[in-house]
Length: 538
Image (cartoon, rainbow, N blue to C red; front, side, top):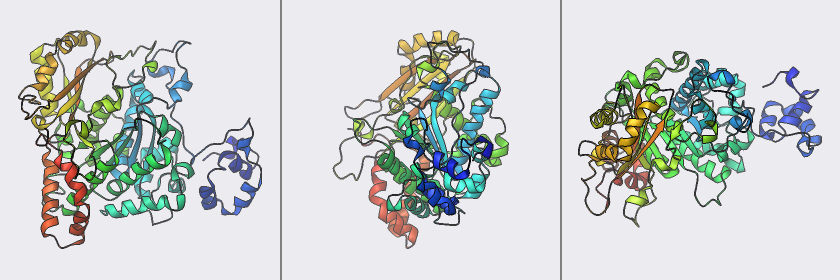
């Protein structure tokens, strides 16, 4: 990945020995005739003046430059080295499969757009990303990504060791609609105690450890994202993260659901089966799932479509606009816990309630009765919302309009807010407007609005359990308008119910391989869907 003029060694053997000695599998694949020479010499890592790199070649995140609109940080505040440091940053993002790769591209292009325009909010992504990587079974899809072409300058030969799932096990043409192939290919990467995190993938083990949380981005429509992501999550816990922590690092999946009413309407049986299986398997592997519905993303107002330059060069035409509000949602989520040291002495000065990733949801066992027959504790479903309002001043009526805008007009998945068992919300905007709103938040007015019959219907519960509503606030001086971001926990969701009904019918009446697959995993499907809505709340 480096030209000879950039080497700190005189020969190729010396360069590989110094920089890639711990990547034996990659060396054997790319330079089989040099293996003996590379490993016959002394290990440079044992010398104190030399440092060995780990993993396949990967570029590091750029530090925030002084021309981004952020004032130079004073000497007592962190330097650019701190900005490069992954420790304590919010996310390690992993885009899996075609949809995940496209969304990761959109995020990186959004980050670059903010930097190129010297916008202060560029610190959100630079301060919020501990790292990121792209994985796929289809090398042609990977070749077309911004991640490959410009972020890393990868050729096809570079992509095979760095980003391919199932290296050496298939023809790199994808998994089609077979989630089981996606699963089998990634399992093959870990056979015989292999560890692609260490040996070849871009995904850096230390950055995974340093992040506050890990976010997988994928769909459950086709094979790779649906089948490979749960295994990937399990392998990160097993092979990378220490198992002696009292509290495990939270795992999230941002999942694009199979489309309704269009491509996969009445004739999308395979996509519906993949959807139900993919959600269920993800539910066993992660702590929280954020489902995105393409129809909802396509219908939200343009006011929450952020500017992303050159997106048309890397995202397919049908996904360019619908990926924008998804990126806006994740950007606000990332801003909610940007490490505070990044803002000290800077003009951006995010002020207010900064909450950790795990604060965005409550685990299922906190709210539901313990079921001894339940096969596992399912992930929490987080229904995503994002509203925006332009107004010179704010009172209760304006905030009611903003809540309606977020929970109905601009919800990013189809769900019924009155059936959720709680939610985390974030109000953010410029200082002068947040001064008015802060009083209403502190007086409980915003919580009352969100708890009303029209929205979360907090009084509409049976038994002793109550609806949890958490309202946070941030001052973000680079904005003109006020936003309401939120995640609503485990509501009823018509798209998921449709998939469930289809799978149940197939289980009862089907005589096919798909039907057999559903029967095999039915004991896992039931726990997830039995926790949606409020019926099981004691």
